[in-house]
Length: 147
Image (cartoon, rainbow, N blue to C red; front, side):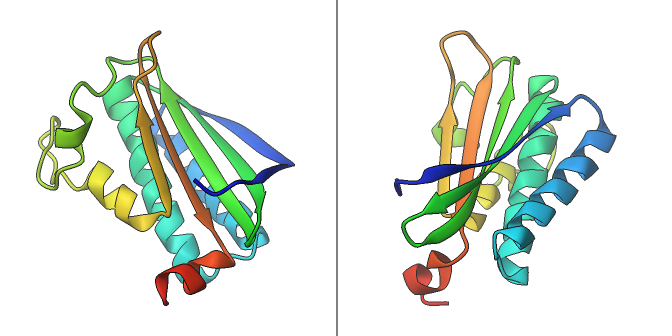
């Protein structure tokens, strides 16, 4: 994990209905643009955030997204944390496999989201629910991944 200093920019957004997913996509794109992310990086991060927000609503019964702009050693980044109070993710390893779905979907959501960001973590807190954290960094992406 890359050490970071958190900035003041912090946004809490509810995930209760489909229209909340649009708000989250717009907010992630806006903050990523302000943090200096290129268009491709923005699109990857927004796609991952959109899928995870949808999972929070569909599988977790709703919850919250916390979006934070970060100051990292290599430049700015964005972290998004999705939390819900649903049943959690009992088999994380299996849930990350392409093709696995509990909702008759394509089964690309979690694994695909993980591939789109630089940091990805799933937690099943003892109090229940699930917490999925993603993060990407604007300045370090090209250097670290040779893009």
